[in-house]
Length: 207
Image 1 (tube, helix red, strand yellow):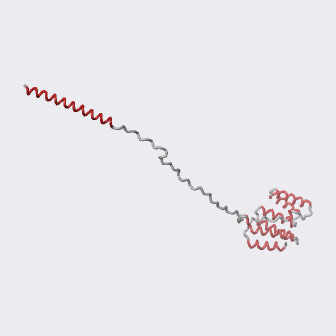
Image 2 (image 1 turned 45 degrees about the horizontal axis):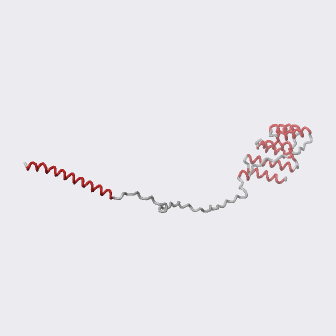
Image 3 (image 1 turned 90 degrees about the vertical axis):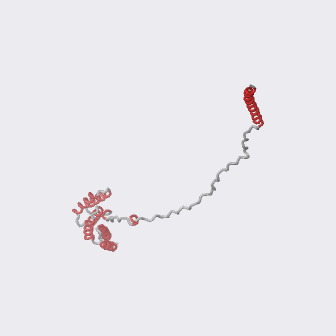
């Protein structure tokens, strides 16, 4: 009976000892945690300790290079069309001072000049042709008509009319020179270069 009682008491004692040991261990752990120092937050770094932000290197300011401007030429070279303009047909003396004494022919020549100034070459030529029917041997009328035909771009007819004027011009050097200049222009438009040289030489002889 004593053995049974002792067997019942031993577990009770051992259970009590375990509970007491656990309580003592918990008390020791709590005391150790209380003695540990609380962790404090690290202080914020001062402005002096912070590295100063350096501004990026500014590009060096240098004065711009002065590029000399090219000098403008004093004159521009002329193009081929400007250097050698197309020659205009010479003005017949009959346009300035009609030689005929017939008042009808003089009036017709004045009308021809007025039509020519307005650019109406057809009526101008018609007025001269009416004058030739009255005075067919008037060298000034033939020369004037040749001048009109040249303006109408009829060079072959202009050359023939100028030659007819030369036939009636006699010793009128000014009229002869003008007729040969009309012939030179007419031959040039027809591509007769040698004939141009010949006509200009003859015109120069009467100057």
